[in-house]
Length: 95
Image (tube, rainbow, N blue to C red):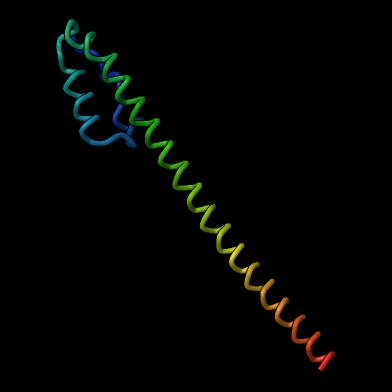
C-alpha cells in the first residue's frame, strides 16, 4: 500500500536537492510516521520557497537601484557640464 509522494520533484524543481531527498524519504515511511513528519516538511518547503521569492525580489530591487544610480550619475554629470558651460558664457560676456 504505497502512496504517491506529496511533493512532486518535477513540480518542485526549484527546491534544494536535500529537501527533495527528504521528501522522498518521508514518502517512503509507513503512514503513521509519514503523517507526523509531512506537516513539518510542508512548513520547510513553504519557508524555502518564501525565502527564494524574497531573495529574488531583493535581487530585482538591487538591479533596479543600480540602473537608477547610473541614470542619476549621468544626469548629475550632464547638469555639471551645463552649469560649467553657463558659467563660461557669463564670464566670457563680462570679461
